[in-house]
Length: 360
Image (cartoon, rainbow, N blue to C red):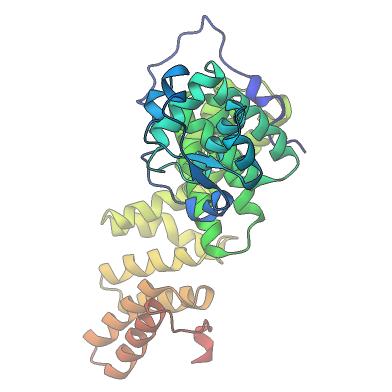
């Protein structure tokens, strides 16, 4: 299935009223969550400088202090009388930008790429990235989307393409940290895309799924409502309408635990207790939030039961352990209090092997 396909062509008409865009995010200055996984793609470059007489002749004085990235096969041509084509130098700069947008000379590289391409560098990088992504070379596509965003931080195809390829990377990853960082990067860029291009439906489509997977059901519903406002794709619209129909119970659960978090414990209990006898009874946070509500209403035995049931489903949930430790400490049961406090400390220190509560 194509990663992008026709969706990048579905833009508002030229005469459509557009809301004011938010200020663009400077991709060269933002926090780079995933750069450590991409820097290796620029490690083979060596750096040289353009000659003093060449700079004014080509209007490149701004490159005076900026090093030129070169591949090993570029060195001979770069030092020859003919020189290395500016387009090849631009390709190398784009790769450095994609691997490390905060590179100290990123500003000079961006200006160089804009000048030598006549303003077309970002569009070319996006085209290349899309083609490469369809071949599932996601890291290579990611480098080009990132370079394009350094040049044009609010260009729709670059923003959406970057979010999609980050999503593809984390879906294919096995390392937990890599999954988490690329997932956060994808989420941020789906959000930024919907803010800068609110009428582009596919960003709302994927943002809704991202929120759904985080348990943010109200946000998922809002994102999918916006998708339905702007999408004319029949199959996808049917899919999202069905997804939204299934959100009724999760939205009620979300309302319940938000009430608990806000200190409205009786309201939270009324919303959450019915789900103990439902298909959601294997969702461990349900027991944690019920436990918090019960102990806050001084219903100690029910709270202990909820926290323990939650730990059977998620044996490493530190907050449930701390709640149990506090309850047992107040009740004067020092041994049980120490048991849960020590487990929590071990998990926070990375030294606990996951087991069920039934093992104790």
